[in-house]
Length: 118
Image 1 (tube, rainbow, N blue to C red):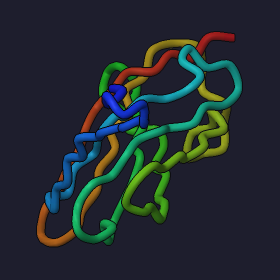
Image 2: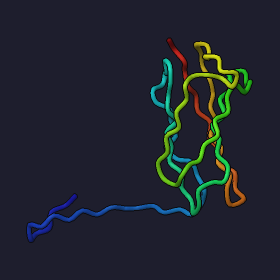
Image 3: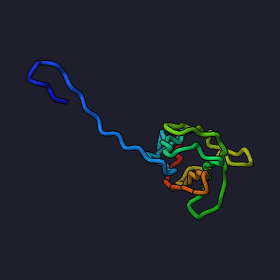
């Protein structure tokens, strides 16, 4: 933010544009979670991915939940109700989640940790 000598306000922004498919600013909130959480992230690229999934794993690597969702370029939020693919509420503990986006013959993924604490 700067003020010109003629007393008018001027604001300048730097914007970064990318045509590459990428997952940015990924996190879940709240973390630690109690009963539910949201996976929040930003997608960049030219086109929204054809296939998108959030995969949740135990700390030992066992896949317990797959959430398939339609996403858009820009900001996204995907809810999770703390239930596995069998419909059971998951136990307290640490889990890993992996977001995967596939589109334009490119696969992008990122992994983060979440904690369930009741």
